[in-house]
Length: 310
Image (cartoon, rainbow, N blue to C red):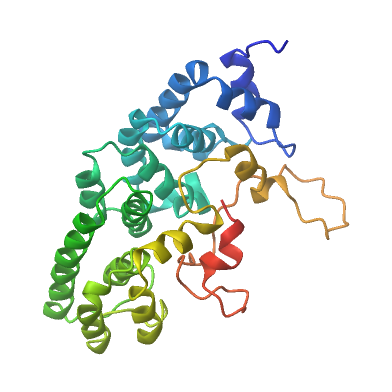
């Protein structure tokens, strides 16, 4: 008979990075939300209030990352508010704190923990030009995911995307602004990505005009490819967009087990006496989910190398 774990034993195994995948602790925490949920909520609150402690931890602080995925897998709506606070941290802090989880884990966690009346807060984050661009993108992805999972009416999201897109297009035209990947002026392109994800064929003429007016980043996708994605029916969108684990976190143990930090390069035969590998922090520009995959396959990132990144 297995004994019930204590939070202190779970925290000892999950707080810092270890090159060994902490399967037992992960399974123990997931099996006992009555023990782990409140401390993990406290961790997210502390992370939002004092992110520097996590960023500067030389041993590789990990508990906030586990908190994001565990609470999302439980669909715990109490995590939504602290996640929004984390999403509003400044760029340098978010990149160090979350790394690739900023575009993979955060949008899924925001979607999975969002209460029934929380879409307005996601829209406020997406619209906030003071927030980091990729946090705004996460808020867009979260809304698309909620619609694809059946928790947000597609029609409501479609109406907001149309209004938001028209406002942003007017702003760009009035300011003579050009789209620049990963920057504030690329927001309209991110809105179009969200439209693609829900098959917003109703907005095809509008999107085509934005392409003709050079308001959409050509690095995102061609006009023809974009219109083809917009033309997909709703069933096809749900089937394709929720593939590759892009739904709510469900098989969390398997997903976390694929994290790159637990799989050091097996081709490197040289002894490494340096510090343990820590969670990845990006130095190169971020690759969007609908950008061409940098491996050169010709596929979109989310359906190639991005399909296995958590």
